[in-house]
Length: 287
Image 1 (cartoon, helix red, strand yellow):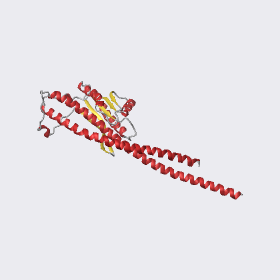
Image 2 (cartoon, helix red, strand yellow):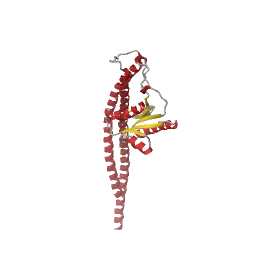
Image 3 (cartoon, one colour):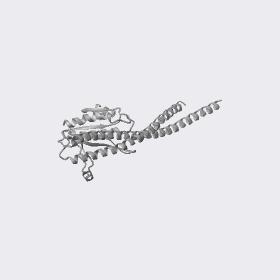
Image 4 (cartoon, rainbow, N blue to C red):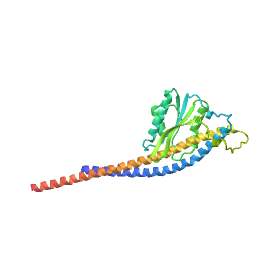
């Protein structure tokens, strides 16, 4: 019965683990829905501020903001957004593979790379493989505030204005659906103003005094900050969705393992009973 007892202990241990993974799945599902709401609420703000930027930029064609100037690319910056915690499947590894591929393509062209890292996983990864990290942030939690990101975004924007970098990209995960999250590399700087003809014919802004360049500078900064914030929120939604799926898979695997061990336990118990009966019969025949 020693083998049966050992199997019974394993079953008990796996059942406890199954309870944990099931609870984590439910928590991740709840957090995902809340984060999705934040992500959806951030979209109208980002769209409206982009429209305002396009209005102002098109209305003052003589002024070309540095954020909209194309330069010869000699050095680029990457803002890499990962999670602080694991247990979310291949979410971080897929993004980091995509980012490394993009960085390698730049370096093969002789372009230098600066890194701004968001999330403990990105920090641990680039600490291991190396890279010129100029700013980093972690422990943002499940409901980050824009003020937590302003500092590291400013580092990259100041570098762009000082012409230390000639382009800025952000690597993050896009929330396609609960079942699918895709790694993505998007260009933030230089910005390209919208050429939407509807924007060119509807003007409803009055400047007092006529300080459109100063207004555009502030708007562009806020717009970039909002883009990074939205990317962080979307990445958190991806994290919770990936964790929910990973925990669901772990729960299902635990159920299969329990079923397999239960069958092995029954076989071991039956073999033990059969052996004991055989010993009783053998003892009786001797008598």
